Every structure is written in structure tokens, then in C-alpha cells.
Length: 247
Image (cartoon, rainbow, N blue to C red; front, side):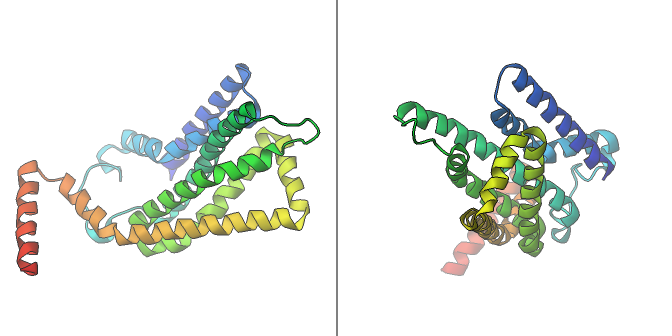
């Protein structure tokens, strides 16, 4: 976990540097924040690089052949990864949504007497990206953790949303207050809870899909360790065996 903490520190430092760099160039906080925070999606790669650099051949990221029962990522590590990746997914989707909103406003004629609820529009525009990202995350969790993914995914979604709210409260307090205002009425609470339930459901569908392709992913992992000639020979034998079963 020491290397994970160091990797997180590196990613967090990069986020802060990028955030203040965007600020210096006049980028609004509501855009600079999500742009910088999307770097959290790199946590798995940075952790692998740091662990291999410090532990060398003893690193769990070093190349080695492992049995199928050891294939994947331990659930404590996956909880950390997935929670941070949820934040990255939401932030990246928000960036796309802000860009789309700006384009929509540029080509639309909006009456000054009818102010636009930018925050609500961004949330709606970001939904497709969030759902797709959560599905892919769920599939990855299913491949890497098997049946444990069915509880890891919901916990990760809740953790990620909490971390995102915490980040917003620190970098853009005004935006955080706007979010809190939306919870003052029943419809705002219902919408937020409903989106959370749908996102979790989509993620669980991804976990199911990941469990279905887990064995295939393990075979693919093994095949990558073999020379081309051996791979081709195994494929030919498998093809002939499958053809014989159907005949």
C-alpha cells in the first residue's frame, strides 16, 4: 500500500499543478476542476510504474505466470482503484457536457428573462458518458475480481460520488452550494437518487458481462506470454477440436 499512497500523491500533485495552470490561463474553475481531476483515471498506470520502479522483480506488476485462481486484482486494491476511477469518469463526462452546453448556447437564441439552469443541463448532458464509463468500469471489475465485483461496484460508485462532492466543495464552494440547493426539494433528491441507482444498475450489468468473459481474458493473458508459433499451433488444434465436436 506504500507504493499506492505514493502513486496517489503523484497523481494528486499533477492534478493540483494542472488545475492552477488552467486557472492561470483564465480557465473557469468549474471547467479547470474536472479537466484536472480526470487525471485520476491514470492511478492504475502510475501505481504500476511506481511499484515496478521501487520493487523491481518483486513487484506484483512484474511479468510472471499466475494460475487462474490468482488472476486479477485483490478487492481492497480494486476498491481504491474503482472509487478514484468513478471520479475520473464523472469529471471527464462533465467536461464533455460543458463543451456541448457551450455549443448549444452559441447556436441557440435564449431570452434573458428565462435564465438557463447550467448545472442541471450539464448533469443531463453528462449522463450518457457517465453510464458508458460506469459500464466499462463494471466490466473491468468483473474480469479482475469475479463475483466479488457485484458488491465492489456499488461501494465504488458511492465512494466515488462522495469523493467527487468533496473535491467540488474544496475547489469550487459556490458550485457545491448550488448542488446542495438542488437537494432542498423532493424532486432534486429523487432525481439524484434515481441517477445513482441507474448508474449502479448499468455498472452491475458491466460486472455481469465481465464475469462472462473472465475466463477468456485469462486465456488471452496466457496467450500473450507464448511465442507466435506456439499460439498459432494451439489455435489450430483448438479449431480442429471444435470442428470435430460439431461434425
